[in-house]
Length: 177
Image (cartoon, rainbow, N blue to C red; front, side, top):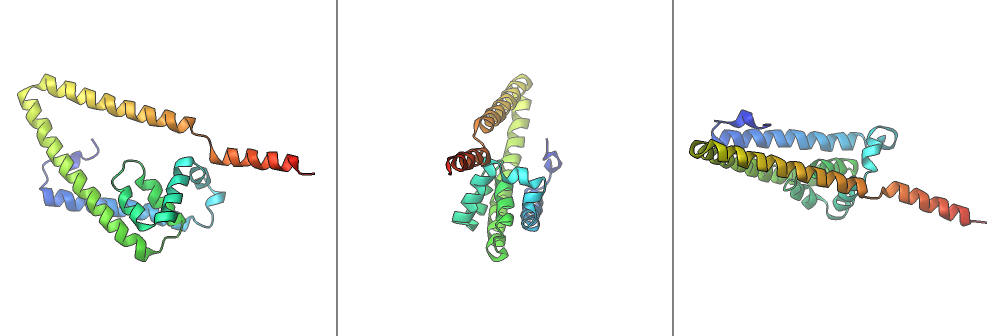
């Protein structure tokens, strides 16, 4: 697992480590977006910023600002897009940094707590019944795989905002005299 390195660590150290990790990761994503602001349309990043998920994140950041950055840390898979959108939107650091710190602290607390409690519960279940532990683990992996597949299918079915806009522009152009 990605956080196996935390196994056996004291809770405060695990919490602090996760906090530093999330600050560096999210902060780097924001910095990437901020640095790519001017040239985003001419790079590989252009494909990402045209995706419907990114556009939704960008609209949220533009409308609500820092609270969206903080709230994004309560989600899975959205926080990267929100931090990138905040950078591309050139959200001022005086607004972004407090949102990053609060959101990062919440994220670190949740992950450290869930990881610590989950690992303890898993060990206890294994002690009681290894077969049950394997069945529960397999069910969890299958549920996660089903969720990922469902999300991928949903994204594939979403209309591409740029394609729809391009078709609309072409249709309007064809109607002009």
